[in-house]
Length: 162
Image 1: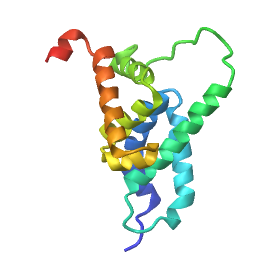
Image 2 (image 1 turned 60 degrees about the vertical axis):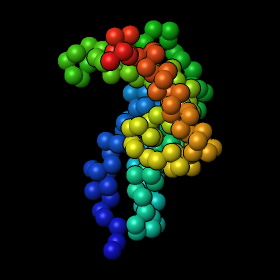
Image 3 (image 1 turned 135 degrees about the vertical axis):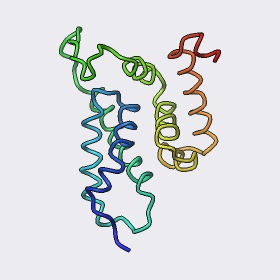
């Protein structure tokens, strides 16, 4: 059995990869990371072995592209102190996602990656550890610390109690 058409892979895993990119680099740079991920994946897809875990393969590529985005952003100068507000695409200014992305952005990178790869994609800790480096126990600890930090910083005290 051969590989399925690449456009099917994009349709199936595109939203998952976008969630990962948003969690790691934030909503503003996620589209670029997503595009770079699928461009790289398209080039490598013909050589992917049939039966490979496509989700883990794409998350690995997205991880590398997100790191490239973070490194590139750190090198680029910031032209202004005040960033103009972007119009909401949902009709609701701000929205709950903005707070969540801000809370995720405050996490250390390894915790952010482990939370994204395990809790958003559903990869087991062994695969998360292969992607970010380290052991499965360290990945589990980083994800747990990240979730605990999100509970403290993102949720209100009433939401934490429930």
